[in-house]
Image 1 (cartoon, protein in one colour):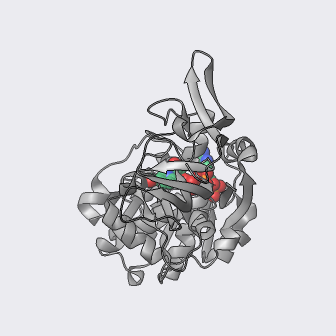
Image 2 (cartoon, rainbow, N blue to C red; image 1 turned 45 degrees about the vertical axis):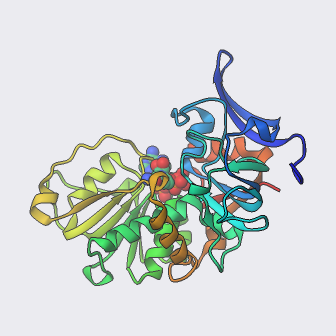
Length: 333
Ligand SMILES: NC(=O)c1ccc[n+]([C@@H]2O[C@H](COP(=O)([O-])OP(=O)(O)OC[C@H]3O[C@@H](n4cnc5c(N)ncnc54)[C@H](OP(=O)(O)O)[C@@H]3O)[C@@H](O)[C@H]2O)c1
């Protein structure tokens, strides 16, 4: 195809007789999952799920080998779908990239047009991938919490795993939407960073005491939880009447040892957030807001790092050790 070299670089994940492994390879366009739109990748990003997939810490991929990377933004080179033309700037987040089909850590990619969002006006491809699945997930949380009646007047929102990608964007976007945001973090040396994003109170994860009762004194009106496990169980006991907990992540575990009393006595809602499977219309709406009224105000502070495909493995190790801050961009050019 015109404009595509015979071989190009991609970060690929294998699991076969030689074991689980990932790294940079030279591949051709025919090695990639089929799709009706071909793009030149410009930017991707690193999410927790990408690190799990690349390191094999969790079996994310449903088939092997696949190119890693759940996010990508770039320019259309060829399209069999009339909604897209060569030269269009587009993005995809989730949609089974690097799970059931090849993902975004490649210089060229075939995509399914049903998954492609036209780049919203006001965002560059770099900015869109700076936001990526992390910012999109924070924004889905706001969208779904507000659909259930969450409002700034009800009181503060707490964000857990606050210094990570989703956490950083949740602080920024909820603050932008008028909420008072409190941040729970394991990184006491990053309070300044979190306050810079808008957090009005920073709390060390190591100093938390939830109490043992199914219902404890109310502390927050809602929560964006990236940690799961004991954190989510503890949070559920201290959310105010009719508050909402957006359950996004499992950085601290997947078990949930809680009671349903907060749900049936305080009307608290536990909302599931699945960015991968978000319906197309909701995707378009939320990306439109991310380019406008929810546009992150501290995008450049949240983008803590920018790496090339060759440096991906090192960046995954930092993330898996829980040491990353904000979001790492991947330059595909
Ligand atoms: N539901 C979805 O659609 C969706 C989408 C994106 C991400 N996620 C999930 O959301 C979570 C956050 O993703 P991310 O991309 O923001 O990851 P990330 O950048 O690695 O952030 C995770 C944060 O969680 C905290 N953390 C790490 N290990 C922990 C532990 N053992 N116990 C408690 N806290 C710990 C750390 O923040 P502090 O040091 O500040 O506490 C870390 O920065 C992940 O579990 C990810 O799988 C889900």
